[in-house]
Length: 288
Image (cartoon, rainbow, N blue to C red):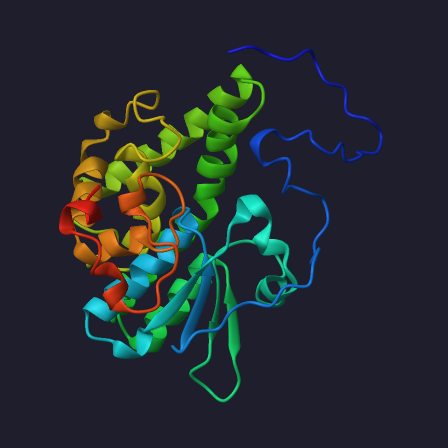
């Protein structure tokens, strides 16, 4: 790791295009659409526009769990939004999510289509609508929501902080990596302590588990940033046990595949329009 010379911020910051490492081509300091581009619409009530990043996986895992639990009204079409190519800046996507981040969804089950954005908000909306994967007991429900929003507030330190500086930044800066590695490990310790006395995050399997697993579960399973050894994830034994338990669920395996456009070809399902789309994938491929 090397440090850059000390940087003195200017009086007024100005954007230097291309100064941003791997994601320089899509990062910019302004919002809004950059091209007119309509979104495709399928036959199901829910239209999901996403990519299988951890935030995208949160929603597809929930949708697949709802369907596995018999909630047929949760059928959905999943369309690939390739953020590396700037699909999130098309006018149709910006209409659904003015923040230009995946995932985004439309609910066409009512008289007027309803847009939904922010993964936590989508999960909470779906869980409440179907009365599933959110505890009925008031105390456990409160605990579930606390952990759901803990994930929403904590993940930027893992993804945008540690993940960026450890895996994607054009220069490895020791201060930045140390700072966010420390915070990531603190968060893992928070989880490990809680899971030492709890099988699930909030008394029963819920959207809190799904949301946290998509980030921290996949991290300890070695699927994020090639950082498992660096962060000594095996030392968080309770998190590891919990992550493996959830990873073994068939609906989670399916959800992890949807809108996946990277990794082994057997693990990818770019679009999902029906349960039969998984039939060409063997069980060993689901578990790859």
